[in-house]
Image (tube, rainbow over all chains, first blue to last red; front, top):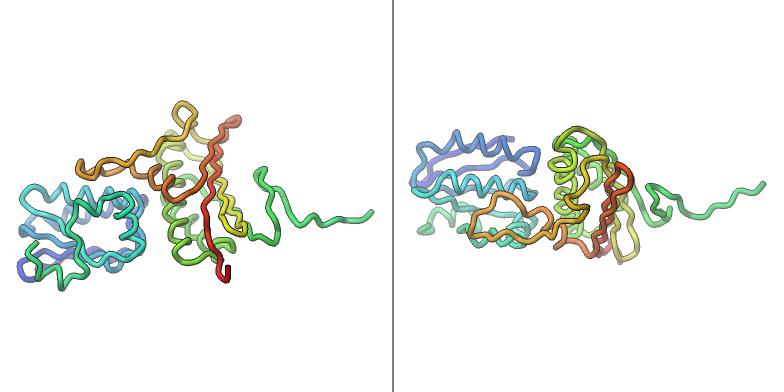
Length: 111
Length: 158
């Protein structure tokens, strides 16, 4: 269970190793990512392929990360699982993110 | 004297059919305990019998309800949360009780969706609860908050 970052093709990729981003973990999630992003390049993609569950606190934490990066850098998301994608869609928060099917396609997209 | 089996029991003033599948899950009102309480609820007989897509809906709905109790009802102190799950042929009925602060004005929040463009970091909870359920009722009796929530669900094998 970890959150790790790497630079690939000039893009910061943040891999979320947690099964859930929920009320119990939202603060730790934000703090860990805040530590990872000071030197971030203009494009940041969050890899959510391991995340099976996001509640409203988790959703708020992801939006908070987007605001931490703005305005110089933009947060994009990749590899949302169906249950997670559904929460994004219901709350219409999917409309404020560029969402890629997976990291590989996110890297080749122009952002 | 003859003992009569009525085929049901009464828990938290709700009638539970013994054949229909019910479970009672209790947890302390803090976010760590809610996470493990939710896991226990998902492993209980009534929720194991749901289709995966319905289990996912229940998981989100329950997480919002339980975390609201932790963040609002129990914001001033600790207490217990009791969750009763009852499976009926075409719906799941949830009863949730706590001894925390009452709802503001004694009413359920409207649950309006915050505008996505404003980049909200919260305020989705009651919108999600109302979106995922078919009926929601609230009662304050003495020091107890009681929520009754129903959602349409399908069971394995109809």
